Amino acid sequence: MPLTPTIVETLARARADLRMGLPVVLTGEHGRAVAAAAETLGAERLADMRVLGAPVLAITARRAETLKARAYDGDLARVALPPDADIAWVANMADPADDLSMPLKGPHHALRGGDAGLHRAAIRLAKSARLLPAMLLVGLPEGSAMPGLTEIDIATAAPELDALSPLHGIISARVPLQVSEAGRLHVFRPEDGAEEHYAVEIGQPDRGAPVLARLHSACFTGDLLGSLKCDCGPQLRAALGAMGDAGAGVLLYLSQEGRGIGLANKMRAYSLQDQGFDTVEANHRLGFEDDERDFRIGAEILRAMGFSAVRLLTNNPAKVEMLRAHGLQVTRRVPLKAGLNPLNAGYLDTKAKKSGHIL
Image (tube, rainbow, N blue to C red):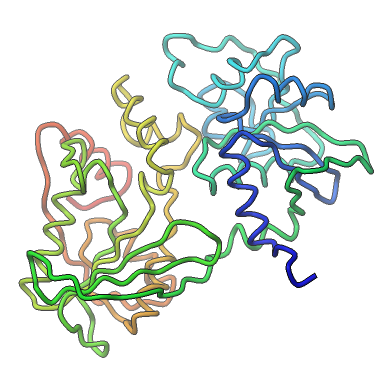
């Protein structure tokens, strides 16, 4: 039927369901399973899932390393729930907040053999919903129906989860700024229902020449609140200032808070940093990689605005390589020195040593 949702729309529904604590059904070549996000699952629904069978918790290899669970599947571990495990056990397996004060006593029974395709897809779906990458799954008998639950065929969904959702320019309007009265804000909306992204254009950059550009990931704490834990706010203002001084430029403000893990998970990482872990270690303990951002978004927006070459304001060589890998010519990396203070010196040192930033 013409009104039937597409796989992209169904995935958007699934993300919303998981964020509210509602399970979804995943279907693959080797079977079907009910899948729920460990972060939002409630005790009642955990009990309902136990009625269906023996639940298994899928966690990333990063989180498994912290929990001393064997990641037999390489990128993930499938941990069988003990018979007496309650919802607090599930939550503590997913969230490292209390790892030090209440270490989980193993050994954990990690499954090996069999297909992990549904579990892998479940973790990918949790990440795309900005949830902790820990999912509880329980297999369904062949032919069983789960009316009312969003159902996803993982073979159909996989290309959409991996692809960059097409971005569309919705509107642009003049916004006079402190750095330049010739400011214009462009709004770009992805087709998959995810957050919108923005481009701040200063002046009238020549589309035929390398434009002074910055890819700036949203940082609520630094950009808006003036947090001293990072250098994001000063970098944002310094980049806009440089474009104002030059008379032209474009700053992309990308909705990829916390290096792509979302604000809630970023705050979890901050809490772990207060326990003594650095920014990379905190991400790993949460189950994420060092950086979960998708720099294809920046390349796509620049192309949509008519730019093919940039002079990139960044201290991160990975941004240069990512843009080049996705068809943009980077003629020069322009250093952006701003924001060092006594409270973020350790954070910046970690970025230099572990993430390759040139500071």
